Length: 263
Image (cartoon, rainbow, N blue to C red; front, side, top):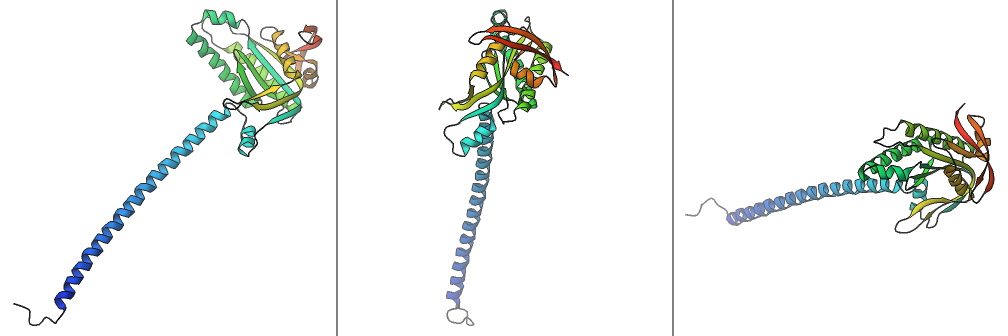
């Protein structure tokens, strides 16, 4: 029986209110789902950004194994061809005496393990002295001081690098092999730049580089042979021994010295 106190339209109003309440609940549920979806997307986006940053850092570390930081900065700034002349650099070349014989004595895994340990120590030395490791080729190691145009400071840094390299090799605990290093140093102008596209590399060229290589090949085991120009710069802070004049391939008679240590 109809409610006698109900006013006309009350039933319709209640029905509309119930409909509105249901719509409001659905709307609130949709809003809540959207917020949950947004939170989920935000979490996913944050994870993607973290992964991207980690990958960028990893790529940067790998790139630092190939190029100096200042060269990376120049490439990032848009430079496409990098070639610089440094009028006052000092080049270090080293290799291991009797490496062919050593490689025949050791198992491949042991040989690579020991070579890797020695080169890691060389890299650490370069990091501490502030010189630029350029590359390794077989058992040869190439580094340069003065690429920041710091001249004689770069020569001192290379001398310190060479002395520490000799010490590290002498202290190296080897497996059935006697490791000895031979080092050459030369000071003068060089050209430095980036070559290649898919496998680019930072390298150095010039007569000073060639001279350092010749001084290394004619040095004696465990000794550091330096050019006259390098010796002149080092004599105030380092002990040098004149070797005299030797005949260098492509150079002829050349005055050289042995770097013995620090004063």
